[in-house]
Amino acid sequence: KNITLDYGKALAFVREEELSQLAPAVKLAHQLLHEKKGPGQEFTGWVEWPQTYDRQEFERIKNAAARIKEQADALIVIGIGGSYLGARAAIELLGHTFRNQLKAEKRQAPEIYFAGNNLSPVYLKHLLEVLEGKELALNVISKSGTTTEPALAFRFFRKLLERKYGVEGARERIYVTTDRNRGALKRLATEKGYETFVIPDEIGGRYSVLTAVGMLPIAAAGIDIEEIMAGAREAMELYANQNLEQNPAYQYAALRNLLYAKGKTLEVLVSYEPQLHSFAEWWKQLYGESEGKDGKGIFPAAVEFSTDLHSLGQYLQEGLRNLFETVLMFEQSTAELFIPEDPDDSDGLNFVSGKSLDFVNKQAFAGTLLAHADGGVPALVVNIPANNPYYFGQLVYFFEKACGISGYLLGVNPFNQPGVEAYKKNMFALLGKPGYEQLRQELLKRL
Ligand code: PA5
Image: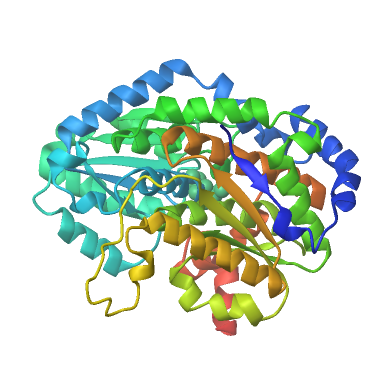
């Protein structure tokens, strides 16, 4: 069984013929991507990665993960954006909802905390408090090695580990994922003798979860990374099919572009499973950073149902009609709970007693799908056979492949992110970084 795409509830908004008319454009996008002739071609190493990844490094990742499990009660994963979101997505989706609160014997892997993804002193202080008295290990992830947020967090945690274990002891517990040769972090790792893992040159941050960036923290969390790669490999085969009719990832790419052309400028990723929360964050980065440029692109947003049906549900049903939904649905839940009978039926819900909670969740999905279609919101439904590492790998590759094709259909370079530099320049100038003196004066006048 594989992931399927059901676009039946979008057909009142786009016709089948419109989709088939896009087939030649999709074919061209496919060729540009596979023959590495499109914009950003130097960052398309992720396309073949499930087949070409370095098996020796993969073994080293598994060994390091085993060592982290022995060494640490808690692993701190430092990184931001593409060096962070994929690992978090996998660990939350594939692990226990309350994994850090579980008894260690039950979890059989360290607690995992994320740092270096914001600049909040409160977050860091609270994290340091939670970590008191625990045995620690650290995975710092940064391709450039100079990103401010993770670099600052690493300063705090390197100091903490060196105080706690000495310089030698800290060396055994610090794992660095960065560029093969370049950057400040690479230099520091070489100087200090930290074990390092590689972020390949030809894979950009938001496409890097299947490299050491994601694999080390995910393996340390006790998740089967071989299965993830097996799922991604299968997806690589499936979605290499140029035929639009047979390729759901390409259909998704084409449909979202058709909807965009009709004024649906906002895509809402919908899930019915709280474990998908960080997956949606990963997806938002993938699509937002890949397509939001040159004055165009769909704005990616996310909601969790049924929670958000009680807040944003009103807007979705009756607000501005510039949006469409992409729904992630697991065909099978990983938990089965049956609703108990209440002899008094005080809440009037005995008509569902004996039914599984997943059945109720799925009826909420079906009811909402129809209501939103009636309200003018097209929906694309991505059906995922089950929630496990294999389908995580498939799903990641599904969205990555669709994103590359979608970006080429839109006519942008889906593999750069020139716009993220603007805030950094201003921040450095305001912080007084040498070389930014003139900009600092200009900005201070404007503040
Ligand atoms: O997708 C991207 O390129 C960005 O989100 C980066 O991953 C993010 O800025 C972190 O960069 P780095 O890994 O260099 O610290």
